Length: 221
Image 1: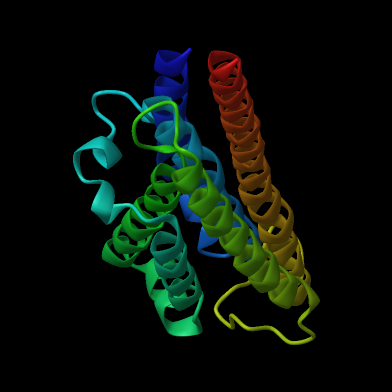
Image 2 (image 1 turned 180 degrees about the vertical axis):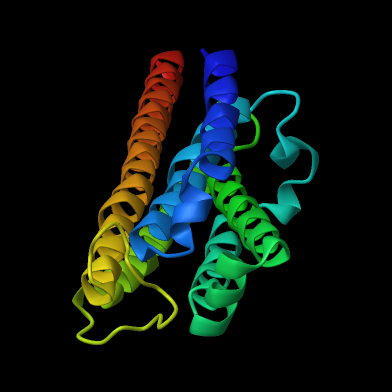
């Protein structure tokens, strides 16, 4: 199953980068945002979770580099910076800009997801709890940026045009909605998954403490 997920993640990236989306993103903000979400909210978690806890998981080798909250803050800075008009324009119309943008998106996405899910298995409660905070923080900023783009009453990216037959402002609204829905939901689901881990570990620890105390009491009797 993990091998399937690993291969699926790379197939998704190949389609994202070699398929029609990069060309479409030059004139459609919705296509750009679909590409963005495919990389950070779908391919990145699939790749990260497929290697989490295994021999090739970098978190096992350098856990101090993978703290979920700093990783989430770094992704926030990277995502918002690349959606400023000038860097966004550069990435849409320059191969070097596109390569830099996509490399940073994938790196930031995998940093967050590996920080949340990586490390030795089973995950300890502290790492799972920090992963919850990191993923929910990322979900919040993705949702906020998506809502800002979806509800703005002015066109933020003047270089966009004929986005799939949509007028530029509607195209921007559709792109914002894609980020709002896909990005918000992906990171929210990841956070809820880890909340389940935290609750399960808490119950397990409580059961172990209960049996320990019971055995101590029986020993005294």
